Structure formats: structure tokens, C-alpha cells
Image (cartoon, rainbow, N blue to C red):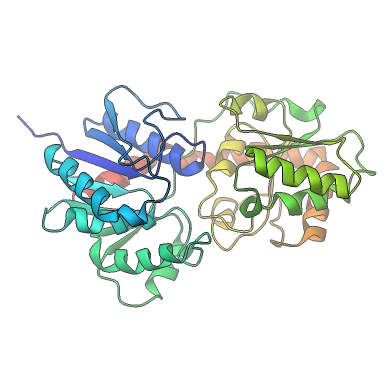
Length: 360
């Protein structure tokens, strides 16, 4: 009888609605369907996933209920080591490179394949210096590093000595919707995610206010904010004496309904790794306007008819929105192209590349 490979994902948490959590859930499910024994070990949060995970993927954790994890690093590493040995794990995928701080001591001497999965890019530590330090350790102590774009791979290669094997694997897209969004009559521009500063929602609001008078029947819908972020952005709107055409909403599990009623998706981020939300929006038939972050959008939208705009530039973002909002023919053409672009990112094409890594 052939032994089934046992793969575990070490995730910061699995109960949030971000692209990292979604990608983990999708790849875990795909591997389970290919007869792998799959486990998701959560560092914090709850063991209840935000995105659906099949019953045969076992979710374990959290490893700690503490808010600050670095002070108890030895304890968490010991718990992880015990779990990995008890479950006879063959390969451990660390979902955020910052967590190799815990997995490096946990896996020392075990012979378990150690894979770091980067979801930002090498130049962006998301405000945590310790993440940059963790990446330096990953380059030497991990067997394999998975990055999302070829540009990010170049960043890793240029950063100095690298003992690990490095692979480029984009995150998978959702399946293509049956038909494009019916949002042409709704005239809604949608933006999703958090944290608000990273996602550039303040820039998007400022750009939107430059267009309000020319497009009085359009609305901007920003979804995924926590209470504090909504309060801050509401204060921004009050200071600018405007709020009527902008809605600020918390996260929702029913993202599909948001896509269904929207016409355009706008990505205004200051930083991205691989914004899976662009693929998700295109799969649902929305037209896309995106800034040209250092990594991510240019890889996904290389053959897209709507040009990328300069990141951090409110005027350029407003001009881009104006072009797309005023041209229904361009939007309809972009919707068709976008749905075709997502085909290259279907999970059926991505997961065999993961299997190749697990065979090394």
C-alpha cells in the first residue's frame, strides 16, 4: 500500500477573510482531493475557517491564545515540533515567512521538508522589521521558498546568499462565473480588503471626490474594514464634507453578492504581493482599474486593455477611474479579456506545481 504524503500548513490564523487565508484553504482542499493527508495548524485565532475547508482537512489549534507571540517563541516552537512528530508530517508549509521564526527551531533535525510561502514581497515587510529578519533566516534554513511573482523571485535572488530552492507559484483564482457582472445598471465601484492604509483606501476616497460632480449616479463601495478603520475614514469624509456616494462596510462572507452588483473593481493599494482579489473580480465579470504596485498587478494584468496607473498618485487614480467609468465599451471588452486571463490561474493548473515541490 502506497503511503499517503502528509502535508501541514502553518498559518497565522485561518478565520480571517484575506487572500492569504483563501489561498491556504484552496490549496489545502486541492491537495486533499489528490489523496494527500492535509492539516492546517493555526498559530492564533480560532479553528473555524472563514473560507470553506473540506472535512478531511484537519484544522488544529490555535497554538496560543496570547496576543503577542514572540515572547513565547520557545513554547510555541515546542508545541509545533510535538505536533509535527505526532502527525508524522512529511512537508510543513509556513504560510507567512515571519512564522519561520517558530518553524526553524521546531523542525531542526526532524528531516521534515520546510517550505516558506511568501505572500507579500521581499521588499515589503508590512511594517514589521522582524519579518525582514525572518526572511534572511528562511533563505538559509528552509528547503524551499515559494514566491508569487517572478519579480519577487528576483528580489530574493539579489538579496545575497540563498541556500533554499526558490519557486514561483501564483495563487489560484476562483472558477469563472457563468456570465459577466450585471452591474452596468448599478454603477458601483467596489474595493475590498484591509488594512485600510495598505489598501490605499484614503487615496481612493480622495480620487473619488474629484469625480463626484461628473459622475453623480455612481457609488463607491469599500468593504472589509474593522470598526476603527471605518471611524477614521468617516472622519476623513466629514472633513471633506462628503459621504453620500461612498459606503464603508465591515467584512462579509457574501462577497459574491458584492461582485454581482458591481461594475468596476478598483485596486488602489500601496503594496501587494499577489492580489488574488483581481482574479476573483475578473472571474465574476468586473472591469478592473488597478495601480501598478511593485509586485502583483503587472503580472496579472499584462495583457489587459485597461492601463495600470501610478501607485500613490491621487490624480492618476482619478483619471483612470474617469476613463473606465465613462466608457462602457471598454468595460465590456475588459470583462471578457479578464475572464479569459483567469483561466491560467485555475487551481487545477497550480496544484501540480505544489506536488512537484513536495516530491523534491
